[in-house]
Length: 102
Image (tube, rainbow, N blue to C red; front, top):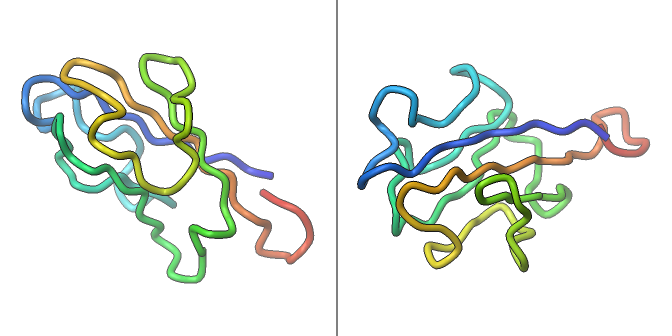
């Protein structure tokens, strides 16, 4: 099982300020949308690989380093976080070899 992580800090109304954008490199395996994210947004994990299915992955969302209860899908609803909080997600995807997870 491999984990891919994305993070953002919700500061003000936008994550577009320096140091507040979604972490990770451009063109990475996953990204968060909308980008820039903002408090009150519905945050969604978007996969770069069109063959990766969200329903076959596990999602571990965290707010300020702590697990968010009930958040286990590719979408984080607006009531799950507030302005100024750091939101992260680890995505555990199935192996492309067909056996186990990566």
